[in-house]
Length: 315
Image (cartoon, rainbow, N blue to C red; front, side, top):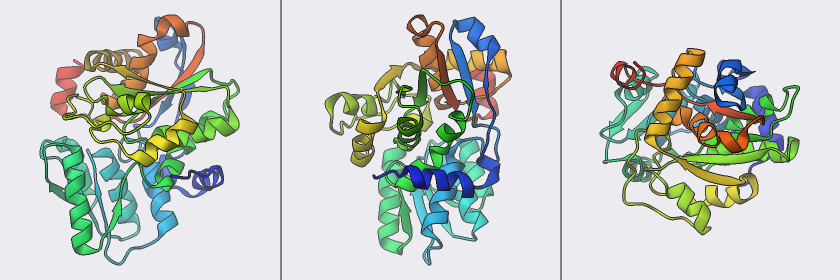
């Protein structure tokens, strides 16, 4: 996956304005609470409540219309991004999701015009069904983490952060299939090479962290975490190869640490984030002692919670 800084800059000019120039600010309350100067990049107040619209819109801009439409697999946020971009261009889209996928995300995909097929016990099983559908129908198969345009669109987050007056010592990035961290890492390597790029995985879905340590893809039998957005069981080789040039470290956080970060974010900022969206903040809180006094950032990259999840996790 060859990510281009020139295409990343182009993405910043052409992706849908609904996803660009999101709020970014030093949270004084969180900073005081943790003793770390925390810059939040708010990616959960757009039409799909996640950053995914950046990459999907740029992807469709680059590859153009497809006569047999598109197909992808998603835990929900990527599928909503694909659906938003496909509807904008009057393109057909089929999304495969796990049978236990977040119902709010499934409803969101369908309301945006996608056909949603529930297949498989988890995201990676749904991915196999999506690939089979593409082979049968000739639809253009889109795999998050594999196509560079998706990472380039996501990397515009870093381009916006780099415009702030003060530089960052580190950025903590939720790590799923790798598009977000590879896009952000590519940009910071060019514009702020001293900024440390740290990927954050869920303890219950450690395949990307294990793969990072092993230097090769390491699959796990299950992905047991509430953070469906980063619940990867089977890593993508190309994303791992790209990470060697874009990432400094990969770490784990527990479901409990993500829940604590979600509550902290809600109480201190009023923001509602899903577990994967708060994983970066959970990592900062976990490392607060060594980060004391430093200026670090994290994207709050998703906020799709059902009413029941809000009651159970935030109230």
